[in-house]
Length: 155
Image (cartoon, rainbow, N blue to C red; front, side, top):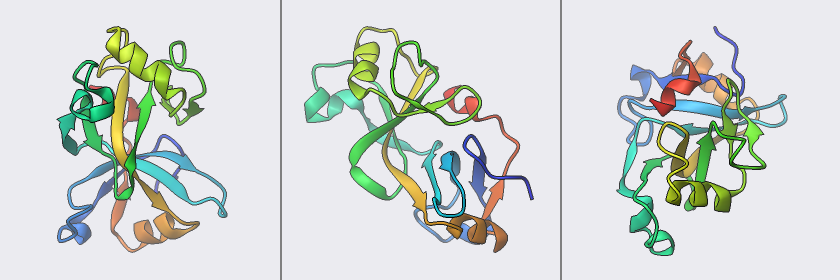
């Protein structure tokens, strides 16, 4: 089994084919700590069906795609990016990718045309696992750790 860390990409296996939340998904793991911390990630291949400017708070901004990041905390937006020069406070999440940071700077960069889909991905919700939970799910065959480069999520 490949090692799991921030920047790992996992895919659901046929064992999850009947699961409406996780069938056919690819997830970027952005945080995976020692046994006490668990893991956090975002579904990167499920468009949300609405754009940022379709949300009331951002209606005066540019259209920017949203992704269904997962079933946890669907009341908030989350993001990953490759532009720490434009967005402060992001946490390294492997391979030159950063999770979160100053959301106002991210939105300003989108609206100014400085950040595009090759730089940033926005999510509604996220995926989270308690300590050891994701490893157990991988062990039972629900997930496969891939060797895909996480930066492919921006292409």
